[in-house]
Length: 132
Ligand SMILES: CC(C)(COP(=O)(O)OP(=O)(O)OC[C@H]1O[C@@H](n2cnc3c(N)ncnc32)[C@H](O)[C@@H]1OP(=O)(O)O)[C@@H](O)C(=O)NCCC(=O)NCCS
Image 1 (tube, protein in one colour):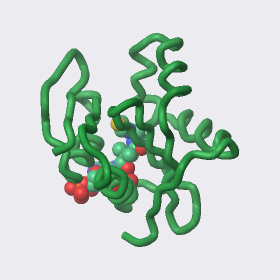
Image 2 (cartoon, helix red, strand yellow):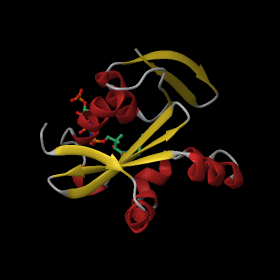
Image 3 (cartoon, helix red, strand yellow):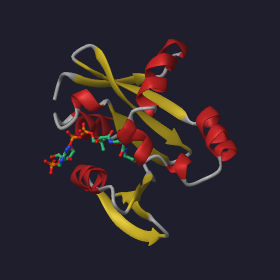
Image 4 (cartoon, helix red, strand yellow):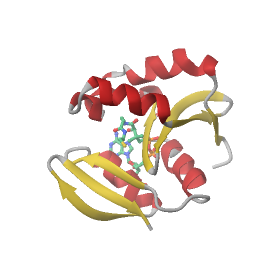
């Protein structure tokens, strides 16, 4: 899909990322609900972040913490293939990536498997997928 591109996070993206992180469905599936806030803050600071652009507008973000990848797309732009395309673009140039997805987050599991991630193992409430 040509309308989707990912670019590096810039300091002026903070308000967009803040609003996206506070959307109800993004918060629901965020691991920060399950682990300590301080650990989450450390991960946020050291992680690489990418902004997903759709038709020239900010549509979502991808976070890479070491080799762990996570993604969120704005609620008003869901189910258009944006996350699928953005993940394909970012993963095509990287190796050893993995994702930890809540067992009940069926949409995200469908997304990652559709892009080519493979089921690896389960731990507590999380299912671990690894990049092929
Ligand atoms: C998961 C998320 C990033 C998907 O973004 P998206 O741009 O809507 O995803 P896509 O449009 O590329 O769709 C991916 C798959 O999910 C399916 N899907 C998307 N929204 C759906 C919905 N509301 N109901 C059912 N299936 C849905 C699509 O059909 C597609 O599957 P397919 O390729 O087999 O048809 C988005 O829902 C989101 O931000 N959720 C909250 C945060 C989150 O859960 N992040 C994942 C944690 S790592």
